[in-house]
Amino acid sequence: AQKVTQAQTEISVVEKEDVTLDCVYETRDTTYYLFWYKQPPSGELVFLIRRNSFDEQNEISGRYSWNFQKSTSSFNFTITASQVVDSAVYFCALSEGRGNYGQNFVFGPGTRLSVLP
Amino acid sequence: EAQVTQNPRYLITVTGKKLTVTCSQNMNHEYMSWYRQDPGLGLRQIYYSMNVEVTDKGDVPEGYKVSRKEKRNFPLILESPSPNQTSLYFCASSLGSGPGNTIYFGEGSWLTVV
Image (cartoon, rainbow over all chains, first blue to last red; front, side, top):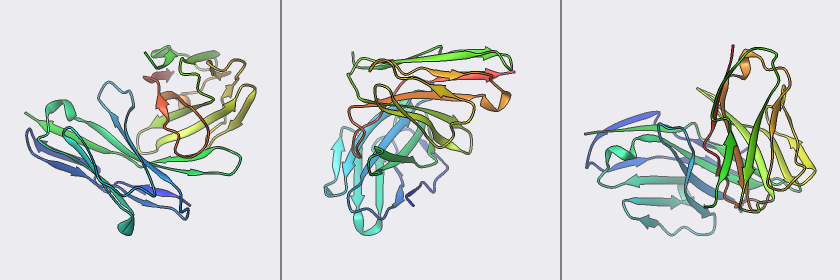
């Protein structure tokens, strides 16, 4: 069965520090997709990034970067020069097919990031 | 603006009083679903719909109903709410139902059943 682990329950950093959020996944499929979502204190879930299992290139978007390593089944997320507005719960998620029934989308438990001024 | 809209955003209701949480998306997405989020349990899927008139149970369907009469709307119905249905609810949609389709979420509905 597929599974997503985010071992860090809570992280606190001081503004301008870099922080990495870990995500480790388990799947038997060769084709799968990985996602990161952000949930700020207001509660909404905001999509950040999607990667497929065949694309191991790292990605950078502004202060955000993602490191996908199939060899270690990890999809880590780094925020550079963190800001108070980055304070949120971050979810890693894994998607696989489930035959004719769409996709099986599994979320990790989330990591609560607090960025202190 | 592309979005998933759900209402109400906040609701306090009493046990047994039927309620409906509406959900509408303007992205012409085929796939829609409902999740609930609870502390320590994460996000769990309640129901999903792969297209109009096609709905199926997710992981925690008990106590809920859904319907998909139009592509854009996917209401969640609690026929007889109970306190254990107090939760944060998310409606979500994606273009297709296959893996790799990004799921976009509504802003969430905070429901309290007393």
